[in-house]
Length: 168
Image 1 (cartoon, rainbow, N blue to C red):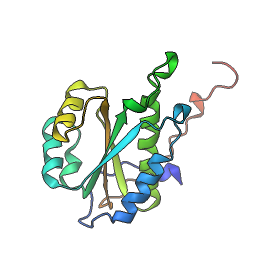
Image 2: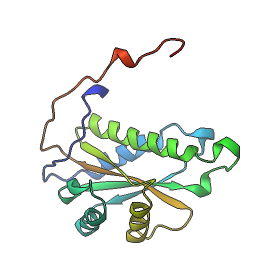
Image 3: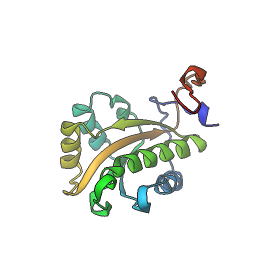
Image 4: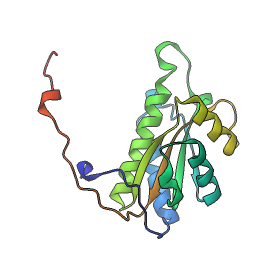
């Protein structure tokens, strides 16, 4: 159930199998996107040194110190049709891909956390340099992944006071 998905920041030493990573990426790539532009690319990171480097400039990324794998979601602006109101839909598209990946991970017993990069210019540029990401591509988010070593309690966040019918 989707409401049982929680951000997992502590991971066991068990590696995440390649076929599980592939399923997570498959789900990410099946996210909805405006005009079906699918403006995403992904970098799978397993090298500890790279994850340690990220923690030096991203203040909320300490879980990468024990994550077996991380996935960078990178917006490919070369795939974006820049016309009027469509030029910034890549933000929504990459958000949907990130969320799909997190839900797919949860469905397979893998925990994860969404680490925002964009629109923080410093984080974007540091990740761009660290992973040699070319111009025209925007580091959007990092998804930290691993088998959970913690079990946060499930919270149902449904709040009827935030639901409006027909008007505010």
